[in-house]
Image (cartoon, rainbow over all chains, first blue to last red; front, side, top):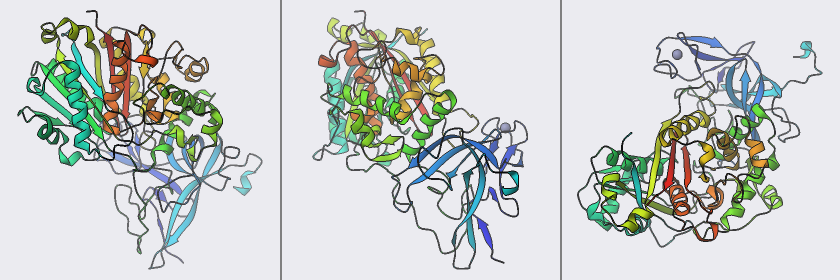
Length: 139
Length: 400
Ligand SMILES: [Zn+2]
């Protein structure tokens, strides 16, 4: 079996890939990165919290002009996953304003972004549209 | 209530390309211009606050002194992203307000011509071995893989988020905001670009980050601006002409971004602007309805829309209606960015937060020529630097 590593440590791989946040035990604020203390209440205790794998797009941009080395176009999104805001690309959709819309329901998906010299695959995540006509069985 | 601080002299250079002038030349031109405008000299200044974001380590304040007067006064070199100029001005105002100086000089300067639209440079290539590093434990660069880090894209989402919350936004709406600012710039001889652009031209130009096309992004250019501030007590000893042209700083506010849900993934430029505006209106004892003109931080067309709301120029959620009413055009009830804004006047970062004050002062003094907003008595200048810092100043015409 191929070894895999997530692009970022808040992406949990496995049978049900999901994102995980450091949640402040005092106020509930969630952070994807390591914090010395909570930015909201200065509390210092955190617990891991799994983030919903579905959400709605509350903002997006279609980037056509990026730094050299960044393939364009791509859709960058700001997704509300059950009350937690998540940044990620909107994938598996045509990158235009007919196919990507505000309020669009999406779900987390993962993909292999490359393999290193040791043969380890790096896995990234994005959000893909949930086809409203699609049944749960296909999901 | 403590005595007010006044802007005695103020100057901005032409914004645009200055291949023959270095950063210090531009800062000197602005500083000497502000001193001359105020009828004072470097020897009278008790404090200098200076900002130059791109060369922050060089100490622009002391570099400037070498060219215009090494008087030994305290220098505060400041940086605060795009709010650097406002931070320099606020620093000088605080020193005067605290009674530590009678006069203060604030300068902001930047050389950005040819910097390209994106300042970040190329994304570094992936390494041969995935090795987690940094606070996210990332094994490779994330820009473009987990959203975007480019400013046109970040601010595009900020405008789109407003649209998601309240509705009514579209590519065309944002482009029409840009059309307004480019139309305004035609009357501003100091703007980097003074070309009117049609809606079709704006929408048909190079797309950078939907819905922001190239003319909907702030223009990189060279420029500097400087202001001389003076205490109320000292102003009263000056000539009637100086008192008549002095502009009252009715409010000077700087805020940073308080924690809000989501700010870790998309900067919240709204809350700190709303906080700064609320404090500024309270300090000045006025409301947004009293403003005759507003210069706000349209770093992108998408940003201008949200700041209508953040600065209280409309009811919450009413920014689209405000714009559609025509109010923010120069002949409207609430003229916004009659200078042409950052999209056409240009955005030499550290100069911006003083240049917007210059624009407002120009109108309050009745010296704005062709683009004069007739009878302007009160104006507001706003900047925001991502990270974030927000500066809001309310300025009032002298009663003298
Ligand atoms: Zn907390």
